[in-house]
Image (cartoon, rainbow over all chains, first blue to last red):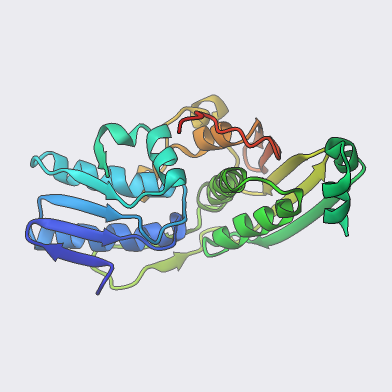
Length: 100
Length: 182
């Protein structure tokens, strides 16, 4: 499974081309399963292939942040293009997520 | 041919003013139609030469409104009934249709997204950022806030038990970013 990879204590989530409500449940469910099973500290969302995201994507990130932040974990967003960065900023997520 | 006229005319707005274009689509309220809906509206607006940012704004706003109609209006969603299942499934609680009506006139795109779902009881509350009636779906409650931010005009009408109509407008070809950074 390439979309979800555990590297050391990090869960890498490769997001699809379009992140919307239809894709969100699958991403949340699998990420949560690995967070619990593999005992990961940090979650990295990779936006390399992503060209579209709506508020469902914000929900995905916010939900994972809530799950790991109480154990001191961090959430990262990498390879986010201008449009994705703008959505992260507008929702205030750039305050809790490291955008790189 | 139309594109030629647009390019050669000095006063583009006047040329565009003469053009009126209209379309309507009706589709089942299931979440796999979300991407179809936003792509269709973006394609409809594309011949006005909008910027990439404007197209992205339109797609996001349409996606928010259509998703709201499906998961709140008709309470249909795509997900897991309990944890541990291997694949998500469709949960069609109230089968219904979502209608999108678009017009392009004077360089302004008007989008109207209508459902015949359960309606919104407290509209002011619903428009508040981060407010959601269905936290279990783990969406962010940012739907209306995004529609407001990405479009120039937003007007929502709703009758409980009858349905909701989201009316949005956006001026195309302005190229301006909302927060204009970079």
